[in-house]
Length: 162
Ligand code: FES
Ligand code: FES
Image (cartoon, rainbow, N blue to C red):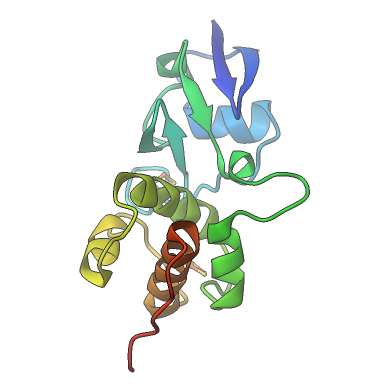
């Protein structure tokens, strides 16, 4: 079947099997391999993308369900020239080790900061609760999101006492 939607602002049209989930379409059909696949059953959050403004798991929706939608992947969150504030923050605060969870984590955090520009630590932890990381222990991920929030808001980053 033919499905038309927008990805990172550009219109795309793909011919897909009706059963193809959006993550496979993005990765294999459109070459956007920043969207990772871990569990493929909605448990890990590695495949998180933004569809019509909502952070969703691309392994849980069919490509056909994206008809007419606006999809943003991690590739769409930065320009060719510069990292996004969240990417800069993740690098600065060592918020990744293997990096497998990172695109989904950043995509989820991006929406979290749009929904709540000044989240508390508890709200950050709740907001990323659906994104699993096997490496970091989350501490530096939370710190990076706090740092990005401060940068976006133009406020001072206050590092919590350990
Ligand atoms: S790959 Fe989609 S939630 Fe794990
Ligand atoms: S950095 Fe390895 S899974 Fe998160």
